[in-house]
Structures are given as structure tokens and as C-alpha cells.
Length: 252
Length: 252
DNA sequence: GCAAAAGTGTTCGGGCTACACCCATGG
DNA sequence: CCATGGGTGTAGCCCGAACACTTTTGC
Image (cartoon, rainbow over all chains, first blue to last red; front, side, top):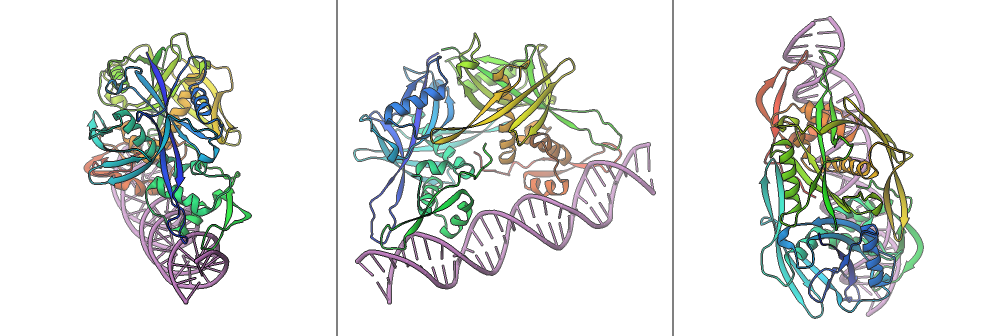
């Protein structure tokens, strides 16, 4: 059986400040290669799969600093490419500041999501300087046997393959779940950050605006205030915070 | 690459009533074969892996009624057996009443768990009529690269392999997570059930006693009262309830 | 002064916990 | 009568949502 792994690598980028009085807005990004596929890696029987994935990322970006977890194993014959019969996906989060070298066949695409709640459909636009990819993923509820299956389908012709579309879709859902239950949000940020930066990570992943006064109180036990202050722009400067290493959350 | 799937099949069993005034107590169970391994199935490149898993379960129990979800893909060379280099685990929940035929090389083992919180260690005893298997799984926190890895290790010699021990451990953790966020608890029960039965499912999976008055209110939106009443024993009879099909939960 | 972000405090409501209390059953 | 489970109600607490308000900055 031919088995490959692939990487769904999330990162963020800061937009230019639109107004001297405004924050820089963050955008969620995902990495694709020149054929609109997720980067793949080979799996050997000599090492732990996760180690193969980690080595591939180090090879790509020349850094050991990133978050990684297994996402899912895909084995639908409809998805098979000529090379692979089984695809094991790993979700990766990387802070661009830690990237030492950027491979020239890979690039980050901004992700724009529109949720059509009633339709259980998600419109996704991936966009970089040269390309704009649009696709729709519909969740179909299938009452199969005793239980409810949620099946995601690509409902339009798109420049990305159905497998890639569905993996990105699943990756975003996993991010949403993890950000509420773990400390992954910090993987997007520098060691020291402003609370508004952390809030922006939550907002772009959850795709909704949060009230800063409440967000502040909610994440207070997870962070530590430093005595450093950053003057950003034409508004009150903020203290820098770090992750509170003593904070322990129930891990799934 | 040689790839197999395996099944971690959970079910429950009722103990004999100890006292005419007492409820029958439920026990959580997991299925092992005569060599203390989880049942495996072959993966073909002709069909969706989940379908292979489902077909295997139907073949074993002659029923289409069960819950199934992918658990994890294991690829640590330390775990490889002579047959398999990659193992894709599926978590299954089955109600014994739906089992039409019981394979004679497989049997259900009662699961007893003792949590040693401080040690981050779990003592697990698997027991059936003939055999008693004891093992300990320790969770080691490894600060690897930028992030925290939680690695589970079998810390004693045991009749089960390390991979089997870890899969059962992960399966129980997944059950605990799912029971709080989905409706899997109902997969253990008949279509009609008493609230105390549902509560027992929660209690054996979460491994703690719940206050019935509060449990009742918590699950109230998920269930529907029927007009049927069951006289069980020397206490007030209870109404039968069913799952409320209109109830929709946020799925992970 | 103004607009925007940083930061603090207060109110309100829903959900969970603990617990008191009544009902129905078989022995 | 009793013990046990079935079922209802209530008071207290915590947490999140909404929002008012002050401070600090650059222009």
C-alpha cells in the first residue's frame, strides 16, 4: 500500500495598517505548493510518522519551532492520486518569524471564510499575490446505520482537489476546537505579545469579533504580564505578555 | 507499506442485582481476542477505510447497528508487529442487544480504571471469566521543540502489548471527550431507556458519581419522555425515555 | 480635542452544584 | 414501616455577555 503524509501548515500575516489609529489586522493563512496541493512527505518504516513530518518541516523552513499534531487519515478511493492510496494529514502551526528559509515552490494563501449556516455550506477563498482560488464545501448529514455521519463534499469545480479542500476544511474545524481547549493560539505568536494580538488570533480562527474587555478576563489565567511596554501607533501603548507556563489545561 | 486497521470495541454489561432494592450496576467493557489483541481488519485500496471497518464489524456481529469513528493512526516503529507497519484504529460502540452472533475467539473484558492523578498514571484492569490483565499507563509530559507533547507509556510488563494498552487508553480518553460533546452515550443503550441507565453510562465513562437530580436537568433537552413505564425492582418505576432526534449539538 | 486601543469595573442571566423534599415500589 | 430509586424545586455560585467608563497615545 502506498502511503504518504501531508502537512496543513497554518500561519498568520499582518496586513498593512489602514489608518495610523488602527491596529494591524491579522489574516489566517495556509500553505500550498505551485499545483495547489498541500506539501507532502514520505513515510518510512524506520521512524515514527510524526518524526518524518517534523523532519520535513525542518527541512522546509530550517527551524525546529512549530506546533504539530496528527489530523486524520484519509483512505477514500475517490481521493486517491496516482502516487498515494493512503494520506495521513498533520496539522502544523508556525510563526513566520521562526521561518529561516522559505521554499520557493510553496507559498502562503490568505484564507477567507464565509459560513452559510442554513445551507451547512462554507465558501472558502484562498488568495495570494498571483492566484485566487475559490471553493465551496458542503456538509451533508447522513443518517447511516444507527448514527449520524457528517460528510463534507466539494460542491463546485475548483483549482484545488477535493481531498485538499476537505483537509483544509477539517483543519480549520480542528483549529476551532483546539483554540477553545488548549493553548495552541500561542503557537502563532512571538514569545511576547499584546493581548490584542492574541485576541486577533482567536477572532480569525473563530471567525467572529470578540469583546476585548471579556476576552481579557477569560485569558487572564493563561498569561503573564511583563514590564515591557510597546508603543505601536496613535493609541495607548500596551504591556507585553507571555504565556503563563504554570497554566495547565485539560488536554484532550 | 503494510497497513492494518484495528477496532477498539466498547460495550457495557449489567451486573447482577446485589440487592432487590438496588439498581443493576453497569460495567464498561472492551473486546480482545484470545491473544489479548484488539481485533484487526484488512485495508484495501478498493474501498473507504471506514467501510472496511464497518464490514468487519458486520461480519463479526451480524448487525449494522453500532457507532464508529476513526481514533488515530499509529506509526511508531517500536510498535510494529511482524505483520503491520501502520495501524489505523477505529473506535466502536456497540449495544450487546444488537449483537446477533458472538465470535468465539473474541471476548469482552470488564474495564476497571484507577487514576493516580499526581503521578499522571492510570492503572487499568481488564477482566473476564478466565483472565485478569493488569497494566499501567503513564503520561509523560515532554517539552519538545516549542510545544508540549503528552506521551503515554506502558510502565510494567503486561499480557497486552504496549500498542494495545495505549490504544485502549486513548480510546477511553476519546470516549470521555465525546460523551461531553456529542450524543455517543446513547449508542450504548436500547432505543428506550431509563434516565438512571443513561446516567450510569456517563458515570462509568467519566469514572465519577453524578448527582441524579442535576444529571436529569442537564440531559433533559437531549431526551424525550415516552408514556411507557418500567417496573424494575423494589423502588418506584421509571418512565422510558428516547433520544430527542430534534436535539442538535455542535459536532467537533 | 479626537479617535482608537488599553484596561477596569459592574450588572445580568444561564448553567452547574448542593441539597431538601416528596412519591412509588416490594418486602 | 423501610430503603432505594424516580422525580421536582430552590438557593448559591461561577462564568460569560453586554456595556459603561477611564487612561494613554499621536495627530
